[in-house]
Length: 338
Ligand code: FES
Ligand SMILES: [Fe+2]
Image 1 (cartoon, helix red, strand yellow):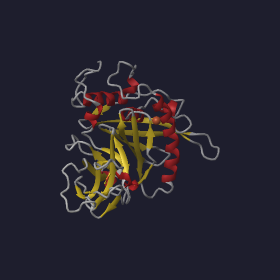
Image 2 (cartoon, rainbow, N blue to C red):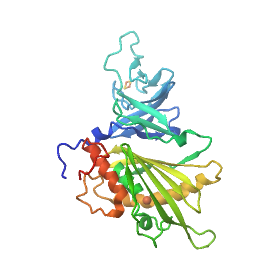
Image 3 (spheres, protein in one colour):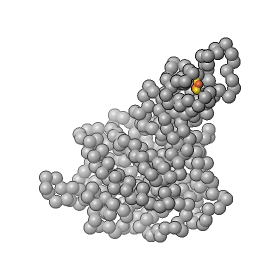
Image 4 (cartoon, protein in one colour):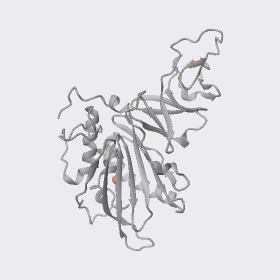
């Protein structure tokens, strides 16, 4: 399949979905910049929830990230024009008696705070809800820990593919948890759903030996649960280490650039989990980053013709098939079209 007129532009396809643009803890009492699908945004808090609007002031182009939050809304640092969450300008201090021009308004987008993330949808009508991760709502039974944002020169789709890739574990992750003695990927099933995919494998991870002891094989059950377009929940059930669940959500700054919000949930009684997770996962993801940033093309391919997929690539392959369907305006679980 070559690129044909029926392929929808990248931005148009994914603007209709929710994407995370910041961790909730990053958004305090100051406005925060964000970038989504080439759109520059400013995020800010209001009494009725998070606002996401265009970043530059329509008056004379000042950066609203330098502005201040007032009880009325976001006040531009240049001349003090103030904007409500809807984007409407409600105050022009230099001429308070005159009517406010109609064009004095910010483009405003849908914004929501959930799972410790700030999510934005650039379209007024999202085509899908946020991922459903109800276990994260019960903060008395789970604790969470987040890595700093991953800021990689690759596409969101390429990032998801590496998270879903089973065959790379024994190669790329040698020295962290990969088992170079066991590179073969047994056949596994992938369940296709309207909103995502799921698969389960058992991986003979190598758990590092403690105090000079040799590494031990830790047969770990990995359950992958994808929500289109760029979110995956990955549950780890090791035999030697703690069960925990990883959430990775890639956010497309553009077609070739993504930031990934990557965090884990675990039982709150496990002491030191957060420190262990941040340390080991940062090393693991650095191994992935080197591979992902080196892949070409950086953009997520629209077909399989430039690569040689094999059976062991089943999960990333099914994922790409679904993403190509979205670009073609088809349901992601549509049968074969490659
Ligand atoms: S540029 Fe923002 S108020 Fe003038
Ligand atoms: Fe990896």
